[in-house]
Image 1 (cartoon, rainbow, N blue to C red):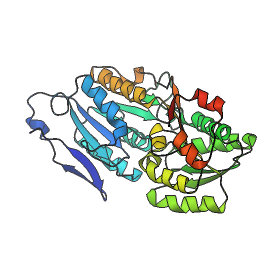
Image 2 (cartoon, rainbow, N blue to C red; image 1 turned 135 degrees about the horizontal axis):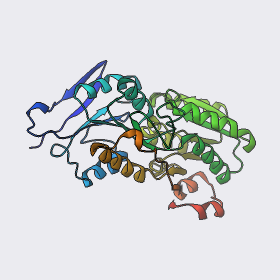
Image 3 (cartoon, one colour; image 1 turned 60 degrees about the vertical axis):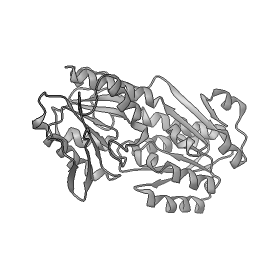
Length: 329
C-alpha cells in the first residue's frame, strides 16, 4: 500500500507522521511542500484546493511516484508557519506552494533560494512578497487575487442589491497583511456610498458570536467579509449567524454563498489554481521564479443565492440579477 505523509504542528513542535525515508528512494523525484492555514491532511484537505492538486496530477505529478507532496497545516494558527517552513527546509523541499500570505512571508524570510509559488494570494506587492507584478524578482511568484480593489467592488454590489443598507459589519482577520489593505480601501470608499462600517477582528471561530453581538448593538443591516482563510474555514458558521440575524451579506468566495450566503463576487479561483500548478511544473523543469510574472484574474464571477434572498425577504434588482454569472435557486 502506498504511504502518504501529513504534517501538523502541535504546540511549538513540528510532528511528521509517517515520515518518508527519502534516502531510500532509488531515483530523485521532486519534493513539494504545501503550506496552508486550513486544517487537514493530504487525504482530508480542504476541498478548495482540489483543483490545484488535481492539476498537478494531470501534469504527471503523482504523489509517491513522480513527486513527494507534504501537506503542512498551521491548524488555523499563523504563528506556526515559521516552524512549518523550517520543517520544509529540513526535508529539503525543492519547491514550496503557499495558500496564504503569512505562510508566504514566513517562507520568504526563511529562504531566498527555494522557489515559492503563491496559489492564489492577496496583494503580493503591497505585502512585500515581490518587487512588481511583471518582474517579481527573488524566489516568489504565482497568482494574485487583487484583494483591496475587489473588497470595494463587493461593498458596491451589496449596496446595489440592498440600497437601504447604511451600517455594515465587516469581519476581517487583521493579523493577515492583506486584511488591513482591504479595510483601508473599504473605509475610503464607504462614505461616498452612505455606509458606516463596523470592523471586527476574527482570529478564530470563537470570535464570531461576540462580533455578531457587537453588530446587533450597532444596529448593522449588512455584512461583508474580507478574503482571509479563517473566514472561509468558518464560512458555514458565518452564514448561519447572518441568516439568524437576517443580514444580507456578500463574500469573497462562491463556496461561502453555497453555505447559505446571499452573494459572492470572486476571482476565478479554479483557473488561478490551475495556473499555479503550471508554475510549479515550469519551475521544476528549470524556470526561475523571478522570470515568471505574477498572474492576476482575467474573469470575475458574481454569484447570487435567490434562496437566501427569499429567506431575507429581499427582491434582488433585475439589473443586478441579469449580471450574475451563477444564480442559486
